[in-house]
Each structure stands twice: as C-alpha cells, then as structure tokens.
Length: 356
Ligand code: ATP
Ligand code: MG
Image 1 (cartoon, protein in one colour):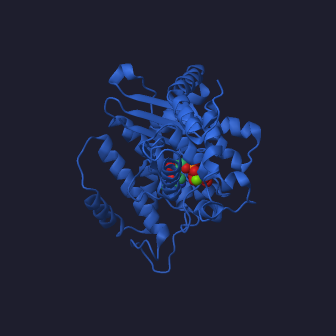
Image 2 (cartoon, rainbow, N blue to C red):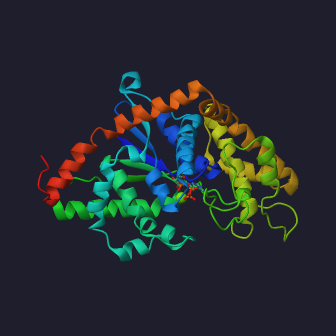
Image 3 (cartoon, helix red, strand yellow):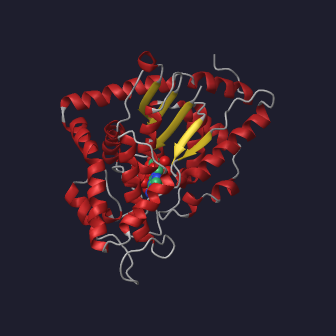
C-alpha cells in the first residue's frame, strides 16, 4: 500500500509557490487516492525552529499552517469513509522521530550535508540545526515508512539524501530484510514559482520582502499590486516568453498556465499540458505587459478565492477553531500508528538494549 508523506514549515503564511509545488498536488493526491492509501501531511514545526522564530509567532504560524492545509481542501479522512486515511498534524506531536534522527545522524557524513543547496544558500548565521535539517527530514519520512513524498523541485536533493540514508542503514544493519524504505519523490513537473522581485530565486516564505510572494490569504487588491510591481525586464519592449533572458515575464506566463490547468482540472476536463502551455503563451505574447499582469492577477485571485473564505472561517470562528483542534488530534493519532513498531525494529537492529 501507498504511504504518502510530506510537510510544510510554519515559517509564514503559505504562498503561491507552496500552493503550486505542494498544497495543490497534495489535494490532488487525496482526490485520486484509492483504498488502503495512507496520506500524512505535517506542519514541520521542529524544522521551523532552525529559523529561531519568536515562540508566540511559531505557535501562531503553526496553527495557521494547519488551517492552510484544510483551507486548500485537504480533509482529514478515516478508513471508514473510502478506505483511505488522511491525517494532518504537527511534527512535534510525534517526538519518536527525534530518536531516529540521532541514529541516522551517526551514519551521516558532514561532507555530504555541506553539499546541500539549502545549507549553502542560507543567508543567516549557520547553526547545527540547519546543517542537520535533511537528517530530521529523512527521519520524518522513514519513520512513517513513506513510499511517496510529494515535494517541490527545491527538495529533490534532500529526498535523494533520505533514500541514500535508508540504503546505508539497511546495508549496515539489516542487509537481508530492509527496515527503512527508500521513498520515491513525486515532483509536480517543473512547478517552480519564482520570486516576484528577484526571478533568479524561488518564491519563499523566508524572503525578507513581502513583495516577493503572493500569500494565499492576499486580497485581490493586494494580488493586483504585487503583480503590477513584479520585476519584469523591459530591455525589449513588449512581451515574449523567454525563461532564460526574461525570467520575470516567463514566471508570470507560467503562473497563468498553471492557473488555467487547475481550472481545467476542477472542471474535470481533459487537456494536454504541452498544448495548454503553448496556447497560453500564444494568448499572452501579443498583450502589453500591463494588460498581461492584470490578466495574471485576476486568474490568481479567482483561483485563491475559495481558500480565503475557508481560511477565514477556520481561523476566526469557534466552529472553525474546533475543526482545527479535532484535525490535529485525529491526525496525530493516525500518524503515530506504526512509528513505535518501526522505531523498535531500528533500536533492535543497531544493538540498543531493550528498554523493557
Ligand atoms: P522557507 O523559505 O521558510 O523554507 P518555503 O517557501 O521554502 O519556506 P517550505 O515550507 O520550505 O516553504 O516548503 C513547503 C513545500 O513547498 C515544499 O514541498 C517545497 O518544495 C515547496 N515549495 C517551496 N517554495 C516553492 C516554490 N517557489 N515553487 C514551488 N514549490 C515550492
Ligand atoms: Mg523551504
């Protein structure tokens, strides 16, 4: 059976990149799930500690993160309904992963970790927690026995690392009967949303500039403004699709294509992505840049409308808050199943004396 696991950091309100690279694909996975599938989505608060947030901020953002998952349309589900299990929870609800992380740390070479792009591109003072971020991520994935991990393209390297770590562990401690399962990466094809202010970078929660990203909670007016001010070079006049030389404009056209794609999906229509992309480019290129920006902003606002409504309800109404509490409780319970067994196999294999 499939076990799908993924996470998002509570480092801020999710943005359009998180939506296209992670949240919308997760929602699609839930829609397409078949009996016996287990889907686990986590707010990785332990990972967010690497940014040293203010405690109250972290707590607030964690709840907002959970609300975002539900507002996107990921819905807790028990086996009784369709034979599918879907849980959302906070990483710190299952502290066992920290023990697995330690055991995996003892197999990890520092040289390997220092080659990780996320570590190399970190702008803040570098701390041990950030250095070992991929080890915790690996422990997360492996303790649930995840078979599939849907992430954005920026996480592909960490997933490769997790697979190698599982192989190393199995090879050393249990060559005949693998204990840790190397997972498959599911990457939504090339959906990498670029920063609006610096198209050389990806859109990020941790970018200091609010203008660099569209938050899922932004109002249509704010979305208009942010896109209007998006960096688009105008060396040549007019619009063209040239990801290498004019990445800012290409980013907007890509976003438009993905908005159309989500709309077609929602309407249950069949489409060919390459064709859709070519059509969108043909539609966009004759437009003046100003007009194109308006069209993109409108499409994004339309797509995010239902999110805003549900998110408001979840975070502002007593019923909504209760729904969040219940989701957390049920998700934690579901995610805990199996982790005790997995960890005791690991402890046994590495030679720790049984605690009981
Ligand atoms: P931070 O800057 O704090 O790391 P982030 O924006 O990178 O925040 P994460 O919580 O680290 O967000 O990642 C959550 C998921 O969103 C991951 O699967 C990641 O691959 C995906 N993701 C993040 N940014 C983008 C982007 N610009 N385009 C597509 N997917 C993205
Ligand atoms: Mg990130």
